[in-house]
Every structure is written in structure tokens, then in C-alpha cells.
Figure 1: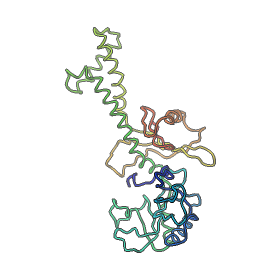
Figure 2: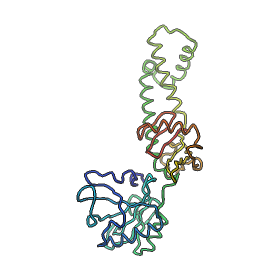
Figure 3: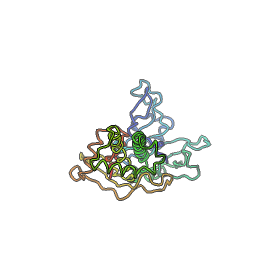
Length: 320
């Protein structure tokens, strides 16, 4: 399932012109219409997961900030906790069949569901439906859960690889500009490495070039060439670090990844290169802690060479 189909918890409460996804409880729904079935479903799901929250789309709130009971008719109810990056999925009572017949059913939507009655591009591929509340609750218990370490990497790696690629493109453009004085008469990049080796050797031996401009150009080119070659030959491996709190203590879930640029077309590729390890601030390795400090003051979506990538407020990718 593509990550764009998943609702991020950070989107909840981010209202635009009074519209968006907002948290609410079952007590805020009126008992009329389909809501009576929705309320029963929500209460049973809350019994299974006492700590969860519910949210739904607010289309036309009366005052843009709050809404009356008779104004809230959620077509789907997202399930999540504040410490999650993405909602677990959603529940609903309605007609979600492709060719609706007007018969409402209890529905559970989850990334874990593969309803092969429908094509994977359809929303229904990820929905199970039933007319019985007890079965619907069992479906919710089975399919609704927080994202595990593998899923977090699967769903967030796209931003990381794009950030790394953008960084590589920047290095490539800088290298192209810096090598122009040397490439105009050479023709192919494959001839350049030996040229660089010879020129660098001369520079290291304190050889005085006849042209000061040429010497400066060589120094500039070397300063961008070496980081580019280092970046190009190294695999894109990270530690995925998820930061959260439990009982007032900050915890760090650290999972090593494989090369995130490997096999981009293989949807079943395993991006993990080891098991998740949970650290406290006192036990977190110094190298990871130092890089997290750097990334914590960078913008979301920014890649820092030899440091890592900041995916969100709680998810960081630290270079190995």
C-alpha cells in the first residue's frame, strides 16, 4: 500500500477553512441514524484498545472550531495514539462496496488487509466488511495495530531516498561545474580519475603550478570530487530512530537498515538489517546521539551528508 493512502497523525487537527480531520469521542455523536451503530462499534473497539483515540473528517462545522452533535456524521473513523506517525486504519458503518447496494455493514480498513475480491488499487482491497458487530470487533483486533519497525521503514524510506538523491544531484552538479576546466579537452569521465590522481599527487608534493588560477580551480574541484566519490561508492544504510515517550521517559527505537536504494522495484524487499533495539537517553550510543543532535535542528525532509535525514518530528535516519 502506498504511504499516501495512510493518514498521518500530524494531520489530525490541522484544519483549513474549518475543514479537516479532527479528534472526537463516541460521546460527541448523536444517537440518530447510522451513528447508533457507529457508537456501538467505537465503544467495543475502545474496550479492546483503551488508550486509542478516534478522529474523523469535519466537512461543514458550524463555527469552524467546534461542532454540534447533529453536525458530525463521520463516514470513517481513524484509530490512532498520539505517539504514532500514522493512524492504524479506520472503522466505519456504511456501504463501501464498489457497486453499492444500499446495505450498510461494519467495516475495518487496514494496511494489513488483502481483500483479493478487489484489485489492489481499489480502496476495498484493504477493507473487510460484515453485518455482525462481534465479527467486526474481531476484525478490528486482528488488523488494527501500530506500525512496527519494518513498516515504519517501508513507509518512510521514500522520503529518505529522495533526500539522498537530491543531495547526490547537488554533488553531481557541483562536480560538473568544478571539472569543466578539465573536461573540455578530455571528452569522457572515464579518463578523469587518473588525471585527478596525477594532479592531486602534484598538489600534495607542493608543486607550484604555473597558473595560480589553475591551482585554485584544482583545489575547488578536489573539494567537491572527493565527497562525491565517497558518497557514490557507499551504500545508503542508516539507523532508523523512532523517538517516543513511555511513562514520562524518552525512548529511542533503533533499527538498522539495508541499502535503501537497492532493488527499488521489489516491493517485497526487506529493508531491515537487524532487530529493533530500544535505548534510553543514557544508553543511546554516542555516535547516534550526536547525529540526532545535528538533525534535530534541521528542517523536515533535509538530508545532511554523513549525518542523516530528518523524516518527521519523531523519525530520524542516522547514517551508519
